[in-house]
View 1 (spheres, rainbow, N blue to C red):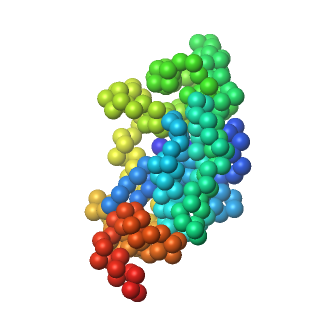
View 2: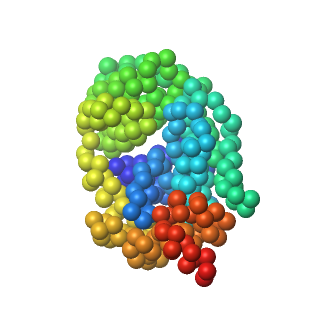
View 3: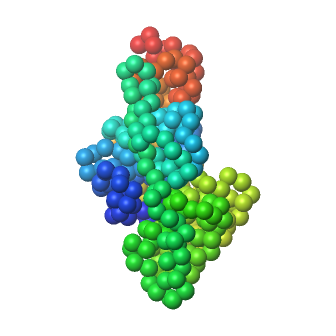
Amino acid sequence: MMKQITSKRVNTLFKRLNIPFIIKKVYPIELVYGDILRRLDFVGETINGEIINLEFQSNKVNQSDIERFGVYALLLRIIYKKQVHSVILLTPNITTENLIKYNINNKTTYEMFTTSLKNFKGEEIRDKLKRKIENNQKFTEQDVMDFVLTPLMKIEENIVDFIRENVNLVKKIKAPEEDILFIESMLLMEIDNFVQDKKLNKRIKGELRMKLSIIDEIVDDIMNEGIAEGRIEGIAEGRIEGIAEGRIEGIENTKLQVAKDMLKEGYSEEEILKISKITSKQLLTLLNI
């Protein structure tokens, strides 16, 4: 599915969201380090060589969310060896400052930009698109983008019901196959972010006409895109190669690399143990080097 979310589509999305970055390359959304695999919403590289992590947020941004986004930014920076910017796409019901600063310590601060589509009315835009569907009219590129963004706009309807209706509508949309796959990919992300009930989440996903299973998608994305233009091999054994244009052999070496970079960033010993997953003995060795 990653190949359906191209830099062109992302830049159209960013323009609509007033996000001041231009993407030149889309990276895998699977954040792999050590024995942990985390799925992010979007990762890409700008024309200036910086990394952008876009995350959807359906609840009020609290301290634990800020810390989680900060960890994402840290790990992306370690993997890609580039400056990282975090952009949080909020649902219209959430109000927060446009720029959130997360102080890791007295040396390192991460900035997170927030944006929303609160000035757009989701029901009105979807009703317009439904009329095109009913009249058997083809969707334009802008129609496709509007459709996938409607759940993130201001809506009166319950968000879960709204998304489920979109799932039903996508089967009737007249558009090229790649556009349909893009819509389904975006809907999958919205389901994961907004449908909290696990059984309902699974049921709605089952209603989507997805081409790949989740596992196939993960392997396909990583194997074809690579991480930091590197090479992933032996995924089944949890071995990571080619991270940050180099070769890091094995899970333990990856954890140690994370810990080393965190030491350079000035993290506390407690934070390093929590995030890197190395042992106290390994940390002591690093401190004495």
